[in-house]
Image (cartoon, rainbow, N blue to C red):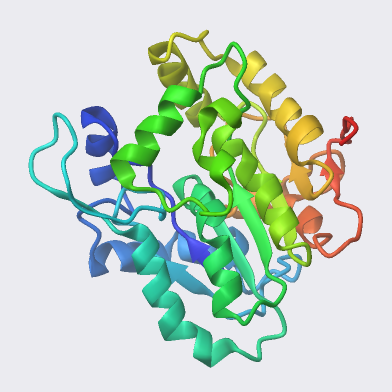
Length: 304
């Protein structure tokens, strides 16, 4: 399992300040921060190697820290961000590339490979999945995106936010998915279907609390700045259901439990113990190899 840590993003003065000061990420990432993570969250949830209900308890775990503020997807050196002093090194995509060069030769014969990320790391899964597949010789790779939804454009406006992220961070969107970089044609939301069609042997899963407060706050700010409507827990939940039923549900498994929490993979309580519709996130994830994607709660998929 390759895990991409989250911790916000850096695209304007406020977001860069928040990202820089993230407790276990940010520009001040250090051995001390890593040791703190390893002693706390590094033993929780999907990293809990002692709980048999964790489907990756017996796997090798590769942890990729987050210090670049670019969703693990940027490739832009010496970037300037308005209101932020100094030059920013948005090189998360290259970092993942170099880590794969380092570790993939040691795990060529692994029984399975999974790419997992939470929050900013979850978006990093969408961008980095192709290079992970390539690094492991084109084999099937499982993907889990934890609490990093791309909301469909509606009265909630996302197009301005996508353009800002792409330009500021130098996001490495797939060359053969031009619509992924074009908000007028759907933009980032096309990444889900692009991956499942370009890599049909992959296995794909998306999880998020249906009223994730961090997501609500982020999309509310960015939708309003784009001239769209405000975001609350009700239209956020509706947007997640539209994402599932219209855009990804035929190919991606989904887990949308009730709640306000942001991310669940680094929490025993949220990943291993809490049941939603009688199943935990870990139990749901163990179904990722099923031919028909598993949806909790049940999906109402629209025709493709």
